[in-house]
Image (tube, rainbow, N blue to C red; front, side, top):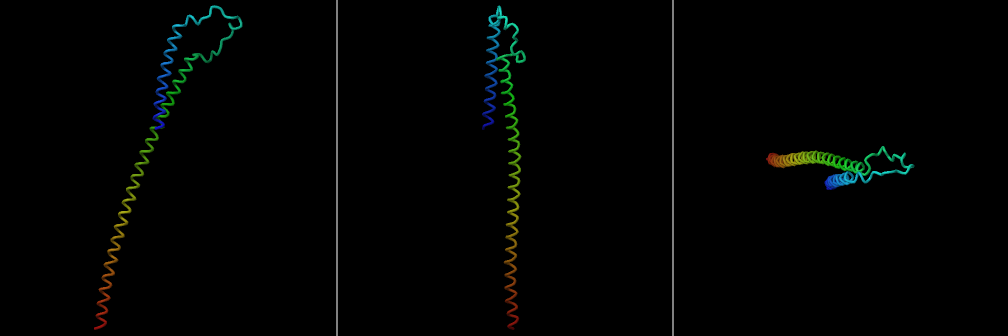
Length: 138
C-alpha cells in the first residue's frame, strides 16, 4: 500500500513539475527581452554568477523531475522484487504445508494399521491361551 502511494505521488510530482517547467519556459521566453539590462553597474559587469549551475529555476525543476522519476522507478522495482519474493515464499509454504499434511496422513495410517494388527494379535493370543488351557485340563 505504501509503495503504491509512493509510486502515485512520484508520478503526480513528475506531472506537476513538468507543467511548472512548461509554464516557466513560456514565461521566460515571452519576457526575455525585459530581463536584459541596458547598463550594468561596473562592479557587477565582471560578476558571472554561478555559471556552473546554468538553468536556474528551470534547471532545478528538471533535477526534481529526474528525482521523482528515479524514485518512481526504484519504488516500482522494489515492489516487483517484494512481490516476486512473496510469491516464492507462498509457493514454498504451500508445498511445505502439503508435505507435512501428507506425512501426517501416512503416520496416522501406519498407527491405525499397527493398532489393528496389535488387536488381532492379542485376540489370537487369547484364543491360543484358551486352547492351551483346555489342552492342559484334558
